[in-house]
Image (tube, rainbow, N blue to C red; front, side):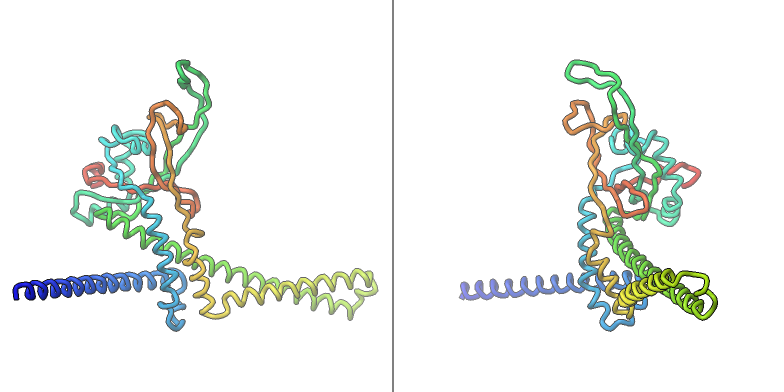
Amino acid sequence: MIQSQGFLNHVLDGITAFAQQHLAERRSHQERMAFLHKAIEQVVDASEPRIRLVGNYPEKLADAVETALHHSESVLRQLPAAVTLSGYAWARDPQVNAFFATAADVRIALSESARIRAFFAENAGPECFALLLMVKRESETFGTVLEGEMLVREVRQIQVSFSQHQLFFPVASEAELRLELKQRMLVFLATRAHERINELRTGRGALEEQRRQLQAQLRAWRMQGHGLHPLLSSADADERRLAELEQRLIRTEEDLAVARKQLGTLDDYLKQVLLVLSQPETYLRVQPLSLRLNRLGIRLGADSPEPGETLSLIELASLEEQRIGTLVRFGREELLPDVI
């Protein structure tokens, strides 16, 4: 009897565990679908809102949006933990020291950011997390290096510096920042789809205008044949000119037919969005960047015996100008008193 009771309890425990696991998986799936639905609507808003008129547009977009989200997650996994910014860190952390020329520059960069001031004005928390973007500059210089036991002068060196510091997406925790960046990257891809659609529209408009001009030139040229123009010019030259215009018009009409097919219906607009989201690595290019620098910002080779530190950063190549980025954290006390 005791053995039977124990077996029954074991079975019931197993059923309970299975039910709990199933419930947890179902809840996770529902949360995932809710997040995906929100992401789809963000994509539609940022790319082409009219594709909501396409039947079952959420289902048609779901796989491409998930592909874009997976790419964003992959990018975020390359981002190291947030670097602490402070005057104290500038003196001790090689990364912060490389980013800013002086400890005072750290506080100035934080204090001059309107986004950071607004965050602390609206939030009572003591700390802020944000994405720091900078421009990396490399300049050639000459210095002295130690090669073995010999001091060699006038050696060509590359000095690395960072400027144009900008802080984006301030939030209260690193988890929030990573989630914010994930959503921002998705919207960034959607805006690339919007730009692609606009480029196709512009190209189609240019072809339509070119066709109108060629048609007008042909009409004018043919009308000249009913006047005195044939008496004043070579017939062979006129025929060559007429044939050339006709060929140009044919090619333009063929190109225009292709351009119209690309955006002929709202389904075609949807296809353009799918094209971008399904190839996120083409439009959102983020790659890890490793730099080994000495305390003076001189770039060191991997085999250099000179003391140096390796900086782990990311390089964003999808913006108008390449930017170097890293996650950062800092306290309210790092802002200058007159801007807190």
